[in-house]
Image (cartoon, rainbow, N blue to C red; front, top):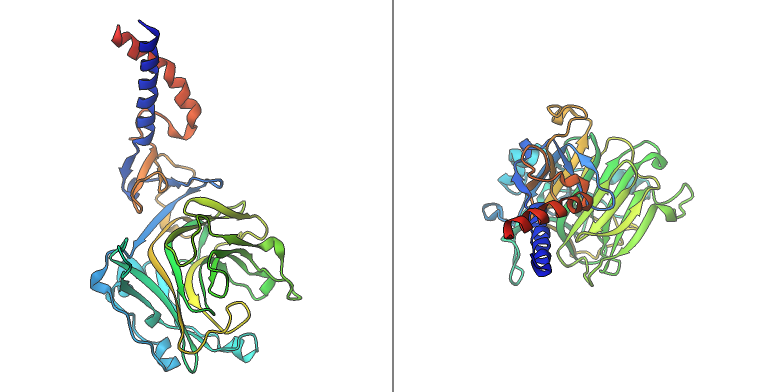
Length: 372
């Protein structure tokens, strides 16, 4: 056999292995024992959830704002989607206000969260990537700031990878955010990891923080926060995939798959809730929005892989992870693929490239024998 034939055989063998390694089987969530994330903080999680707002035309409706603060707080959800089991089993839309902090002089504007500000709307972008998306709206009215927030029903999330395809648009004076939170009587004992967009900041920046970011004297704690430039010459007005991984070691943030920050200092330790919001209180952090102005967090989808202290995943035995799945290796967001398990194919893919190399001589030899 000539050298050229041998070389061709090796090339074909490598190509075959690459194809095998890429050919992960799509699998349903109930067949997965655990979920392995990629990146610098690759971790195992027990649960998975995906919320898709891209094709909900039957629920698309932009509600008028409500001038009365009390009525705004207690209004009904904007569509049946937000009363569905899909939503209410995981999320709770908020209606609380910050009157106590206003009375204490911490905030200068009354802020009222309203179910009226969480809604689905039609995507009117030129050449839109989705039919609809979810909106969290905050608007400065004459008497108060009307805002939006929803939080997890489960208060026992203990480590999570949170992702959203989102953008922030609107007037200066607002903050939009995705974060974990565990409250405490003392401010210094709060545990919180934040991804925040401030509309008073340059639009190509995002704030990544493990709270508290100020000490007892009100001075900034530099180790607690990173002011990140959004990669790819994008701004927060552009659609991008934002990811925050809270693990036992640290909290790490990604934008469109690129690691942009990692903070071990003050990384949360204890069970927490998950929160998304769009708000302003007229304070120094948000800025003071002009009356009549608005800002929005637009979200096409949310995806979570997580561990909880609740018995939700009790069917997965402690320490047992036979079918290992991924949300990162799939070509279609929201779907899962099997990395390792009963149908994972030829290779144990968790061993990396080293195991692939060991197969090359054997496959190459087999192909050479077939060619003679």
